[in-house]
Each structure stands twice: as C-alpha cells, then as structure tokens.
Length: 188
Image (cartoon, rainbow, N blue to C red):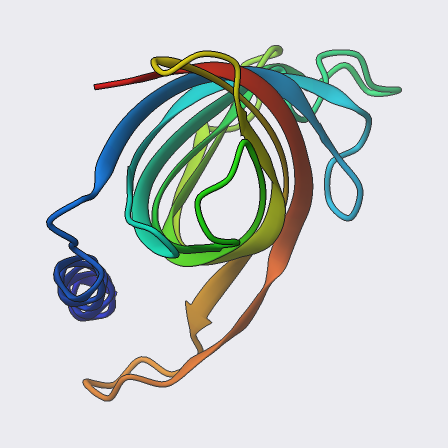
C-alpha cells in the first residue's frame, strides 16, 4: 500500500507542475458544509480549507476536509464512540475563462482517513488510511479583487489494492460519500 500512496503522490506532483502558469493566482478558501450519501449514515457537518493555484483555465488545488462524528455516536448497540473522517487531496481544476463567476470541474487523488473509537471498550479503535479519488465541480466568483466565494460538490471514493503482491492492482473500494461546501476565499 505504501507503494500505491507514493505513486499517487508523485502523479499529483507531476500534474501540479504541468498546470503551473506564470499568471497563476493563489486562493486560500476556508469552507464549511456537509457530508452525505453512500456510506455516510446521516448528513454530517464538515469543515476544511482549499489552497488553489489557478491559471486562466487550469489550476491545481490542495484540499483538506474534516468531518467530526461522521459515523454517529448513537446506535442501537451503543458501541461507537468518537468517529471522524479526514480527507486530504491534490486535484486538477478546470474552469471557464477568467470572469467574475466561473463554473469549474475538479478531479484528484488523495487520502481518506476514517477513525472509529469503541465507547464500550469491547474492541480496539479502528483507523484506516485509504488512497481515494474525488470528482466534482462548482462555481467560484469574485466579490472584490482579493475576496471570492465558492460553492463545491464532490464525490469521494476509496481505492484499494486488491492483491497482496508487489504489483499495483488498484480497484474502486467500498467506502464513498458526497461533500457539499461553501466558503469565502482570499487571493494572494
């Protein structure tokens, strides 16, 4: 799995270098929103930030998201204590040409970290780190020269190496969810 993570990280760095533009603008966008659908047991709060390097049409983004209590603390058996899901990804961003309101699409690779603690101490805490992809889109718009808004909808899905050999055999995993966020960004 380490080889898989290294291959994914190297690919993201190469793609990031390919979209670098002399006129690139840098945006830091803190966001808040919700996770829902697929393996999210209920709609849950999510916070995070995106650091985007955007040219006239293409860009690259580092995205961090955190969803506390993702799996819920109340169940019929009361076995789940604290839980959360953290995402970190690097993504290619393709947007309409530079205008005040720009629709965009995004796709990338990263890490999805899930953690569940046992409220009753019957089993060990469970933590997984999975390579994952994300796809989605949204709209970004300028409020002033330095301040922008952003609305974003993404789908995250874990990837797995389905064989315990040294080959890279990646298949789509069993864990996935949607995330909707909105934020106000600062341009540097």
